[in-house]
Structure formats: structure tokens, C-alpha cells
Image 1 (cartoon, rainbow, N blue to C red):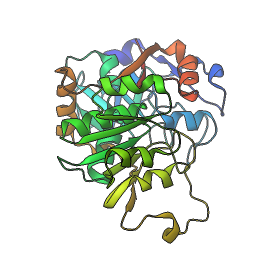
Image 2: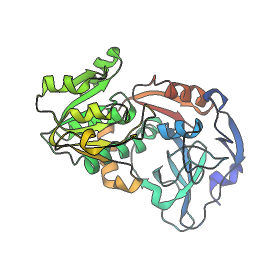
Image 3: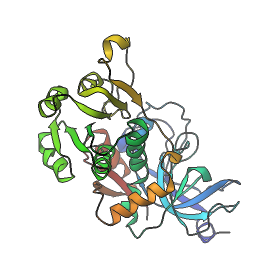
Length: 333
């Protein structure tokens, strides 16, 4: 029996019985979960907030059953691993793989996840900083390298640049040697983008493609769409012939294309792809490298604010209202 289990027969968690308003989110006490063979119990130290959990809380999610503990990511230490994939006390991150949808997620003091959803890590970073990284880096990394196949010397447009994934994608793209265009709807956030390494911050007034082509007349090599299908046609117009746009995010909650007619929708020679990945799309070596770069101050990742579990309603309200620049994180203990 692990020390955590010995002294904590129950735990604090945020449980959703049904969709609620942010202010209705509450911490309650529930039993500490037991891991089956092939699963691992993690003592959670911190977790990041994601749009996926907003969709779940607001009743927009598919494939979820209630009651459920939300949370598609968490960081902490291994508390119990019955089949020995990891050892007690080992630093780990967990993400995706059904967390917070098919089974209880990371909004808790302990979470049980499949061993396949875990990425080991070694770092002296504060837990709140590490807690910002897993899903943010996985989504940004996968979108850029799997979705867009970026190469040094190229240019990339990030539509939705002040989101957590947008900030991370800009940092990764710059570190990989790309010229970065990035958008914000708020003129007051232009300097924030510039401070985080963006070469060409753009105020999004709905006509981003024209502003991109004023700077780079032939268009960008790649575009990462994080806002939604409502602005995707304009994003596609910013992409050069033989370039690619990757649809990854739905900050606007617009995720389908009604009456899609490819010949009219897609500019000639511009490719459209999408990215929706899992934890194994971010290899442990790549995650460790990014964590080390963050620790060394060479990969600027922005955390908007760190909350306590009791402040979860306030955190979700800020996420729902789009008031954060970068990642929102909850520190569990």
C-alpha cells in the first residue's frame, strides 16, 4: 500500500454531475481510485485547463458520461503501479487517452490512467509550470510537425496566437527556425505576442489574409488554425500555393463546415489537414527536450495565472470569457 493511499482514503476532486455554469463548479470529497493492472495512480500536483474541459462543462462535448471528474492532463508523481511500468515517486505527466471523458480525469488529488497515457519526465521546474506543459506542448508539437511538417526557413501563421497552444506553437516554431505570424483580436496584446518571439503580430479584424500578404505577398508556407471554421476560409487565403493549413482548435466553438464544396472553399493548390492527437504523438524524448528548454529559459511559455482547486469556478469563467493570454493552471496542493 502506497503512503498516499495509507493516509488518504478519500480525496478532493471536482466532479461534474451534469453541465453547469463555471460558478457552480465545486470541490467535493470522493474515494481515492484504485488502479487495475496496466493502469497507474498518480498523486496530482498540478493540472492545466483546456478547451476540452470547457466543452464538457458547457454540455458541448461528445463521448462523455456523467458523473465525471474532468481533466485531460495532469502532472505529479506515481503513487501506485500494480504491474510495475513506473516506480513510486517517479515524476510523470498524463494526458489524453480518454482522460476526463471515458474515465475520471485530472481535476483531483489522485488520478488513475492507463500506463500508455503517461510520459515520464525529470525536472526541477515548479509543479505549476510543469502543469502548464503536457497538453499544450503535445497539441502544438503535433500540429506543427505532424499536421504541417514544418521546416526551418519556412513561415507559419498562427490564428489564435494568444491561446495557450498559440503561444506554445509560436515558441516551438521560432526555436525550429521559422518566421512566425500570429494573430490576436485585442490590439493591447500585440506587444505580448512580440515579447514571446512573434515576428509579425497581426490584429485579427477578420481579414488576416490581406495583412499577411502585405508582408509576404506569396503567402505563408503553413497556417495553424486555432479559432474555428468561421475564420478558416480567410486563413486558407493566407497560405501560399503548395502550402498547408492545419485545423486544430475551435476557440470560437465553430468546428463544422456547412455545405462544404471543396472547389469553392479551397484556394488552388492549398492543402487542408487537421490534427487531433494523443500522448504518444509527443515522444518522451521530445517532451523532455521541451521541458529542459523551458527550464533553461530558451522556450518562452506563458502562464496567465495559477489557481487553487477552490478557485476552479473563477478559472473556468476566465477561460470561457477568453480573458487569458497563455495557460491557466491549477496547483492541487
